[in-house]
Image (tube, rainbow, N blue to C red):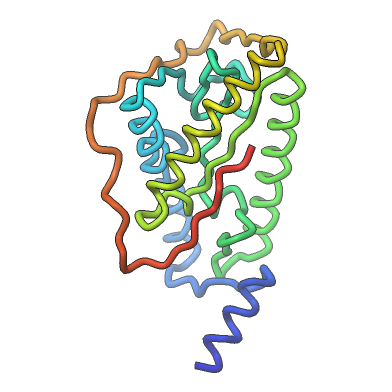
Length: 205
């Protein structure tokens, strides 16, 4: 038990690493198969928004950072970040092998995220970040409701103060058009599991 508490202490300090059960070749192959779009967390949020009547564009390459969801009418872009790849300070962790490589890569990702979001705000967009851990079953319902609240609150605030329209984007001629929302009306996820004790984290703007 003492070792476990020590690990938790190091993890909270951000210096703990997870023991890697694969060699470098296997780890590289596994990481390469991880999807960069249409991930499960993205589908959960998109299907919820669609079921609530919101229409959006997805993976818009004409905007900095290629936001996962663009609600043009509301002037909002949403990024749905994986905790590992984007270096979430709450529960991000690194493999035990090749630590220096992963630290450098994750730090680059974080710097790029900050730069892209700053540019979007400069263009007049409201930026919302939803982390993968915020969509776990135990906290998913609250997170999705919080997302909807922030969308509506931003919309009302925007029109009550006559905020300028966000700078529009142009699609590259060589790329395919951004896909419009066309999610089937399927359930967005299971109800919260009472056995889980994950604490809710509010999506950030």
